[in-house]
Image 1 (cartoon, each protein chain N blue to C red):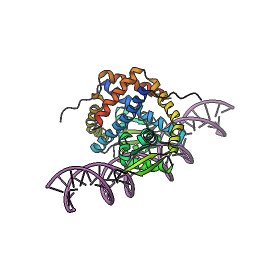
Image 2: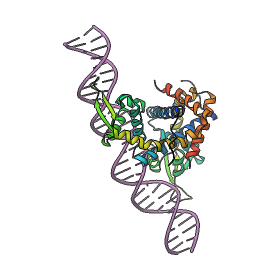
Image 3: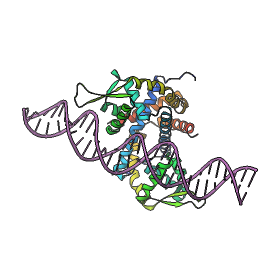
Image 4: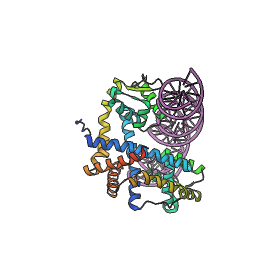
Length: 151
Length: 151
DNA sequence: ACCTACTGGTTCAAATCTGAACAAACAATG
DNA sequence: CATTGTTTGTTCAGATTTGAACCAGTAGGT
């Protein structure tokens, strides 16, 4: 029961800026993806990871970890994507319990169509607003935090 | 219809790190607040802003903007907080349509009880992981992005 | 005063997320 | 092989979010 180390002015400013900016950006991205393709951000991320995965497929649990979704949220989203014909489920050959999500040709096509508009937003509001130094500094900062959280 | 400027390796790394880290951190914070006080992160933010506001009160629309919530989401959350006795609604004297949210004594008490654990998490995973330079660089970066988004 | 346009908040249905409970398949150990 | 403990994915109910529709009040011009 040690004394709380409160945030000083600089730290508080950093935290406030971080929170509001991440929420604003997330909102903007959702809006863009929704209006451009009827996709949510989680759905888009799933497609991206699957498109880059070897064999264009990934295990549910692995996918849930990389896109930072709960198991049930991923189950739901994959079901949605399957209904839309962008993804298919297969049972994993090596592990009878496992399920492989595979991106379909339509899924890849959808990604090609949507990606430019998405990248434009990421660039316009984040990437192009920052200097190269700020960009690199942010990357190391985010990675440190991510490592601390992945335990 | 100009050519898409794709992200180079550095930019892509920055964006990926940013996305996964923000999601992970958000998740961790939700978990902490939920288990420690049954609060969601949006609810906690509302209480913080109200506690610091002049007169410990704020207009709904203003509150929605600072905590980055939609109007309906805020309406819902204020209703929840009101049920819990942490906030009260008052009609705005200057504008008959307006609604003022006021934090109650119980709300302030709740905040005092919860804040230390919340700050611990923010510190442990973000603030204390970063050097002072990284912290300040992140703040300017986030502010640039926020300004670009607030239009 | 009267219209018109806009703002502030709520309501509603639909979509999504959460966490706990569950069943099936794997793994480790005796 | 039997047993026990873990992992995997789904299901379910409840909580939250979204966006559109809506009503009431305000502001600006005529």
